[in-house]
Length: 288
Ligand code: CP
Ligand code: NVA
Image: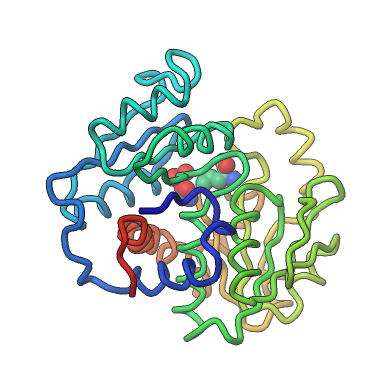
């Protein structure tokens, strides 16, 4: 049984295994009679619903836990919350403010811990992103992805996944909003048109992530030149548009791009459920 805190931890084999499992519907009921704790310190539509349905599809019972109920780090330490939930559940999944809380939880228990988004990474999202790209392009061999906007948690996990799988990724964002990790095959540039040139997938996410509200004005100004518009999309190679959602239409992306025939955001959202199922099965020991 394995934790899933970052994409990088999976290695190429683990990542490919989860993507393969995600396209199967014969994974059985490894969670029959068992629970999965879903702790949320931040709001969620896609992650909560995709995880609940994935747990049900694997025969288990999801328990949704809001932040004030367990008071991670406030009412009890991260370790004590994890130990408590491990008494009842086969997997402990959490969406946290601080990635270190996930590491502390994973260190405290033998049951697998799953990252449902942290300040640093969003591995479940990257799994759905890569599965969607693979389906749209008929394989990842010729994929070239441009990410335009904030090099945030979503971007970081996408970059780890692209790097592991050898998919070239160009990230365009303003000075001071990149990340410092060097990853093979990942380049960071300032010009959005340069990033999108030759890309067959263009991806963006919000400029102001959950918990960054006090930086909102400064961020909106810094990212204004990075809006994904039809004009920018036209610089790609008949590119598909992806967004992890929720989108702030009129900020990082225009309405017409979201609604265009090349927008695959709803397929990407649905893939959250299929990849959540694949990831849970893999954590419980399934292999393709
Ligand atoms: N993409 C994503 O994780 O959405 P939620 O925040 O709604 O779960
Ligand atoms: N970067 C966003 C992703 C939401 C799914 C956030 O952290 O709020």
